Length: 107
Image (tube, rainbow, N blue to C red; front, side, top):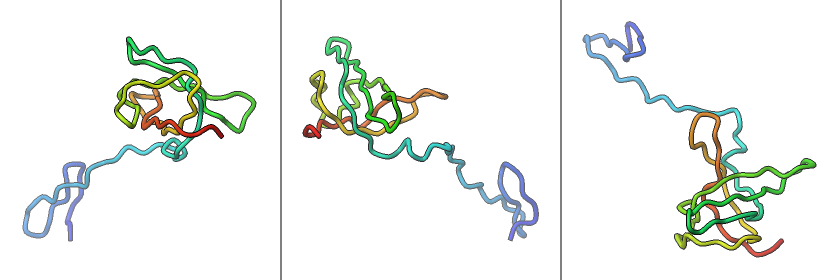
């Protein structure tokens, strides 16, 4: 049982410091990790960069960038207009892009 607690850990009865549990940064947008569906709107194979439009429930679709390394089958190529499933991942503070991009059959 800890006697005192600090950001560095807890001090136990025998004077040892228990390491604190690692902190995990959570977001309020749990839906960001759900699989979404959309269409590849552009893809430039020379640069390996593309964009896709996610079918949303609102009036406008959401657009996400992706890099060729996000294509799940490792092919690094995908056709414009392809229907895909994907997840959204953080690439920086407040910056999101498509990850785990997988071609699917047309809806």
